[in-house]
Image 1: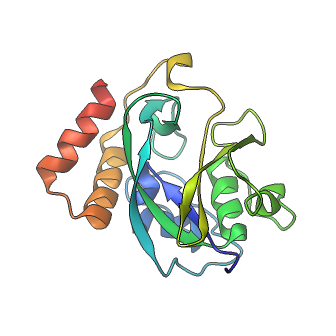
Image 2: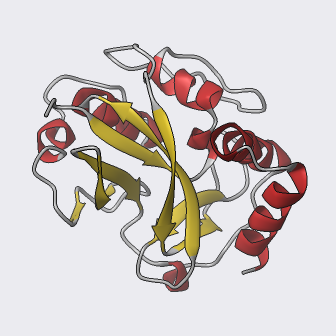
Amino acid sequence: MTSGVWYVAYGSNMAAARLACYLEGGCPPGGSRVNPGARDCTLPARSEPVDLPGTTYFAGESRQWGGGVAFYDHDEPGRTAARAFLVTPGQLADIAAQEMYRLPAAGDPLEELVLDLFERHSLGPGRYETLVCVGDLDGHPLLTFTCPHGARAVEHTRPVPAYLSTMATGLRESREWSNADVKAYLDTLITG
């Protein structure tokens, strides 16, 4: 087994071009901030659609998009359509750092943690500082990050159209869903 890990995206990062902004650097279409990119800018060689138990919900306000951003609550009933990207532990740490508006840096404790995580670990109170292991695929852990609180603990906010459009792109890329399928799924997240 190599030291690769699956980064499981369930929000805008499901779109390959959006994730590339975290790896290669850049600003996503509809976004307002330029991401510096990862220390290793290699794009994932593989991605797989995955379904997670639990729900996706929107809360807070994004500095990148405006409006609500997606969070994952594995304790709530539901189904989350997600996309797993095979990355290195360092790349996962760098994606998480940029989600928290920090610069990627060597020595990030998340980089070491991802190889030994079996359930859930909070690195801090920040919006994406809770790392959750949601299973494994082909001998590599499936890891995602979310906030430390659940869906019931916060007010839900509506995402902006550019954010939803980017999520929709990721769903179509990874699942080959029709526009109607994508709309039906996103509608359940917004009204659910």
